[in-house]
Image (cartoon, rainbow, N blue to C red; front, side, top):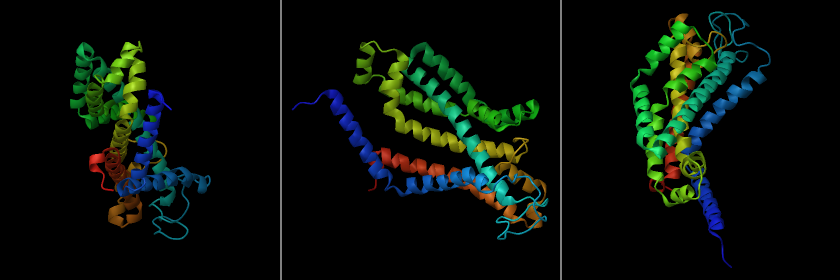
Length: 296
């Protein structure tokens, strides 16, 4: 009984996927990192639903109450429930990170794939554009845009972050694409008459799926840090609450001097946990997808 090359290719793909899954569930870094992010994500998504209709900035109790059974993370100097602000802040922070990282990833893939595959003048122009954006001081530009335009929404903030965070990822994707464009399967697709977008989507991108996923994780974590930094210095959304805005309010109203540790410690730890867990998970993914780094 003979098998076709297509069937052999599909069988090989299934074997590779089973092998990756086998090592993924046994990788401590990957499981710990994604597990922590998942717990915080579920808390941010389900927390507001469990809290009912309570608004994050609503005055619900006496000011400066310490953590208790009624108020798990105490209250602010204005009597706002810190735990309520915390769960709403998680949702906003994840949204800013996902949107900003997603926009940056899309731009990086478009620029990297096209530059790496087409080469020549197209590559030179896109590479020049990438280098220009790369040397621009991102945080300074975001400060100027936010301060002068006065646009304070999560969506617009994420858009600005995405438009300035893609260059390093684009250069990395370009290098990977450049190494793949001369492979036999790409040459065969080119000879069969497939257009450039189809070749990139069907032949090149699937062979870089693990690398692209790891790149998005890094962009996600970077977007969370940039958004939190903007929020902390008072250039975040004017409505709602985020982890960075919680830190900004705690600093503005002297939480440290008053000993209200429950106001600034949870959001600070959450930001550190999200970014740290994403980077740890990224290291775990690298070990899963790279056989030379596997330890089990």
